[in-house]
Image (cartoon, rainbow, N blue to C red; front, side, top):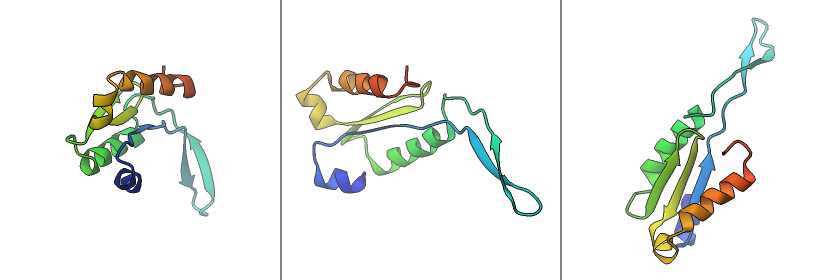
Length: 104
């Protein structure tokens, strides 16, 4: 993202922090086993970590940070692009809804 941001002054970013469905555990003989995990889709571990990283490396002066904790979705929309298209946030949200079944 940092490379794209440096090369493209029109770029914006978004992600959904997927919920964990399996964890890896090891038994006494160091055999790997998958254990089901039922992490909710709201404020997932990935979302919380990625959000902190985004707020650290992408300042609010350049990007509008928009997030939905219920779906663990995060958008960073470049402010200069928002000035050109005031409907951009809605267009990006529609893209998320159309392309990610768990976003609704």
